[in-house]
Length: 175
Image 1 (cartoon, rainbow, N blue to C red):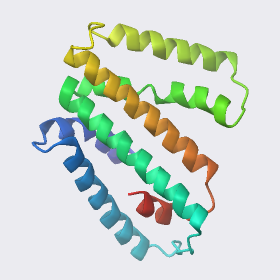
Image 2: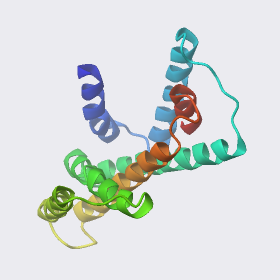
Image 3: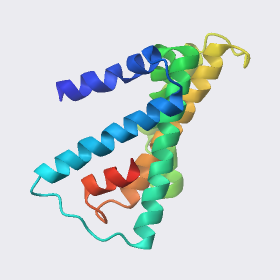
């Protein structure tokens, strides 16, 4: 868990230090993920490959597009506004998830979740250095919020389709 938390925390730093564009970083990241998942699958006794239906393929394609959009928008935010603003903007994803669960799954939004959405919104307003769209910090924050939205959509799509395809196989398809 600690190694995972460290790697997640350093993602933005690596993205900032990389000389490559956001798209190239995401392509490399996805390629590495596929190789790592293939190695894990070959060593794991639990990973069985299931045939993919057309419906599963469409859902996995949508998940892959959302995953790519999430990472590209996150790394654009890192390049434009820096790691701190990108990370804070991406952290909006729980608020998006609460709102979208209510819309997509017709789940009742509880009072404490409304408070969460309000606090996240206020936090994003406080983080914004200026409300000028010409500002790199504002542009980066908007890219980071887009990253949070696409991550939330990815999570909800995965939730809606969970259990149809084994997790390792689904992650490989998405990447």
